[in-house]
Image (tube, rainbow, N blue to C red; front, side, top):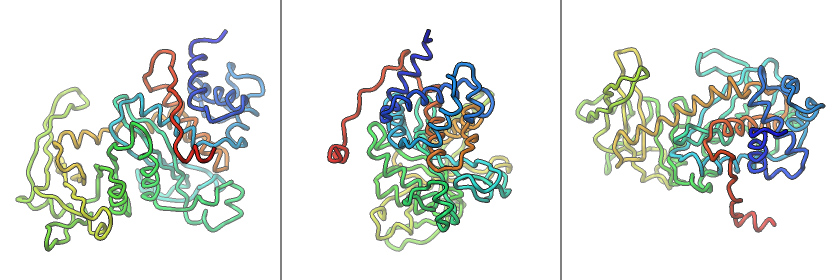
Length: 392
């Protein structure tokens, strides 16, 4: 006899995975989702197939669904984003990086890079997740695998990993702007601001200019060495950190924040008295965009100062910086995805297999944490776009 959870999972899969047309695909999507949510240990087909509640021949079915089936993950993620955007009261988009340690060099996208958390070189996959932050937390709705240069120049390696021809190595900023171009077409999410940590991004200005072209607002943490233009008629080049080091050029704001122990504390934020622009934006569609600089001064000499550039020049400082909680929520979601939903556990070697697994982990996260009516009432199908209607 089916339990209420079984029925809810079935309804969820029928809605989110509606682009999958084969009955067997829906069957194994339900099984994989259930195993991610309820299984113990590593979330691999071999380990998940041992769960008593899964059908016989589960290992073959789960492996086929993730590693060999040709289903397209993109419309599934699109539907998931629509559900989150319609339900979670979203207020911002954000992006989080994920380093997936790997042994050997056969997994798709694996390469050696410095782990930003430790500074040590690791053999890993480097992924980016797109998160929609709302009142209920931050929800993963898309993923990118950041390919290193060697994956561009080895046709045989690409063929074995089933990497599409159009998927090429590009910087992190390119992935972020690709997300933004898609997000502007999503109902309930098109005009939301972007909250980003660009403090270690090699082309932070390029990302900001790209968002300006899309007319998207941003609150971006930047390195103190980020270059800006000050002044209108004869602008001078300054760095964010140098500019905010001039006492008369800034003014203080006091924000009240609740500490982890529950007590309320005052936090001082400095704002630049004027606005700045980006040299890289000259002659582009984003050339006239003005930014405000926000600084959280160094605390007791233990933590360095932090700096943000924001296009939200007219809003109260409290409201602008409150958006940064979306980044914190995304990092919290990444921790859950790593420790409970298996985003580090994919053992296949193919590009489609990796995206299938990450899509299922994202769906499991939404199913578990997205508040909804008790029996999960599905949304009506969205109206087809002009392109979809033209495609038949």
